[in-house]
Image 1 (cartoon, rainbow, N blue to C red):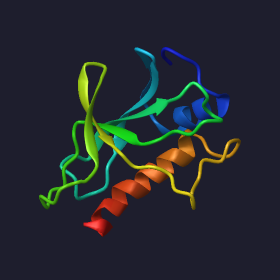
Image 2 (spheres, rainbow, N blue to C red):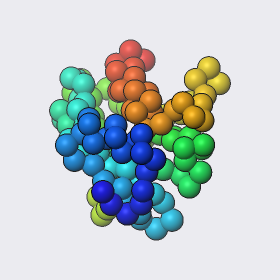
Image 3 (spheres, rainbow, N blue to C red):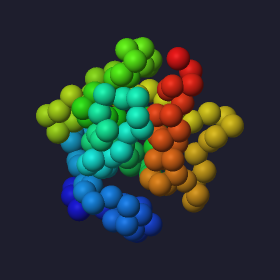
Image 4 (cartoon, helix red, strand yellow):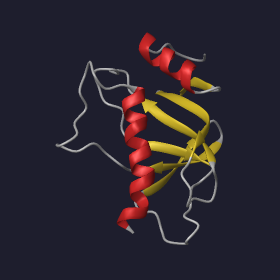
Length: 131
């Protein structure tokens, strides 16, 4: 599936859930890129390429943030906060600086790509509740 190997439970989940995904090694960073990830209504696109940076210590170390291509905007024109551009695969991804909290910490042995994507879905929905 790409440039590095994921834990078997992550591969099983990705294979069962997404038609197209890959692992990418770019510089010193490892990435998972999911093509055609669905985005809730209210954004300028219905699907994005979604990227997650996978640190070397994963799955014991947490996945943090999320990256989208193309850039997401709200159709109501309201700004989305805490965004930074990130070059990946010669594309301009949009990093959403969103993090786990003390109430929702990374749980080694329990959390994985699937649970992080649940958090990403929450962030996408929550954007319309906070602004």
